[in-house]
Image: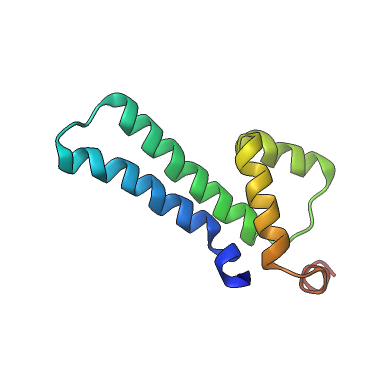
Length: 95
């Protein structure tokens, strides 16, 4: 589970690619499907960066991530980060 949590952002990116690819192969590509797909890919990329950033953030940094990731994905990726890395790993990195 810990390894899966580290790659939650990459999994979200793959879901975004599927959202882009399925309409393409069906021949029903619209601007809406393209927009939704690219937003999911970008969210996955930013989520991957957030989860694998082992520096402990200050409150301003956490607020910035919450705004960038849009509140709900931020909570999901924060939970993934908590699962992926123990407090000992984070404290060793932040010394």
